[in-house]
Length: 184
Image (cartoon, rainbow, N blue to C red):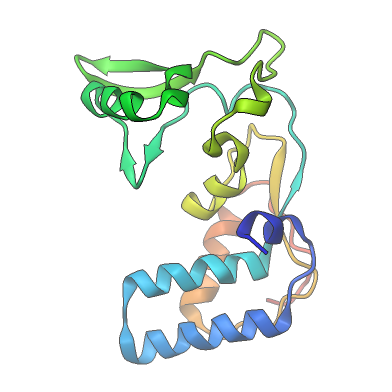
């Protein structure tokens, strides 16, 4: 099961949760590896939260977006042009410039006046994985989106302060996050 499928399900796996929780505690007490902690946190997020709602066809996800390819933010004309020569799907995006060659964000040319994708079947991976990818990357889904974050129905009590703080951060930074269990 991939992250996207797992984030669609409102049911968490207690076994999976404790496995990743245990690895987090071991890393926190011994290894203290930040990359490993980030990796573990992605799995824990999938065991704690799920994404509900549906597309409202507002077009907000297709306008004013930032493009990242292989971990590199495409924030200059040079970076964007280089990626476009390698991947023709990026031709659909038009940069909005801050000044000179600095890119503020992008808009997609495939969005119709009705805010529907005119090339839905041929859309790039970043569009296919929205909003799941943005949640995994930023711990947030924009309030203007029809999707929102919920907490899975069976969340075990969490005593670890760093995990509790991360959960609180997600809840506090997502206005429409719904807590289905009283105890965390």
